[in-house]
Length: 195
Image (cartoon, rainbow, N blue to C red; front, top):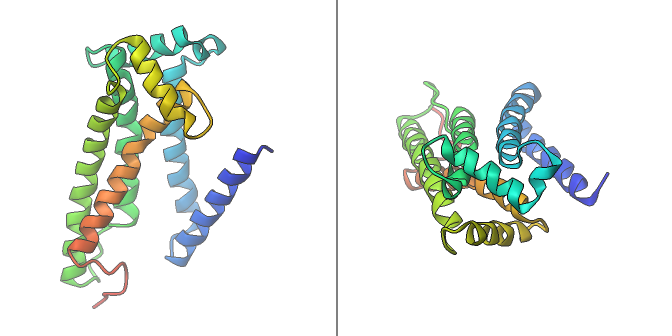
């Protein structure tokens, strides 16, 4: 097992522990992690074209151009297209777990959760738009896009493929952060405020 796998395993264990402390079952956590992992895996697979040849600059650019072509764009739209699936799945998971409406909660808590669900969706959409914008921050040419993605990927010790994966999953973090901020702004107490 590599060092990265050890960190991922610890992260998953911590997440499951936190979910258990909030009364969420292991089955539900596993189901949601699988959904998110599947979405993220699909994004990376689409970006890489599922072949070793796709790890070359030409392979990555071809994969991104194909993904961007789904919406009539080119390579520059590829990461935003790849980000849409994980953003939707992530926002749905966050809304269905953290901000789920429950009749037994106080009206203030229910209102805070309602606002948070809306904000999470807006955050996911903004994250997808941001994925498209960050991709072309250094320019819209193939070389500039690859350079940007490689720079982003270098943050985790990878290259353009890692950068593409990070750009594809970043909207989930944006959705969660914006949703949580709005939840707290509207007085959410996260389970403390029962009738």
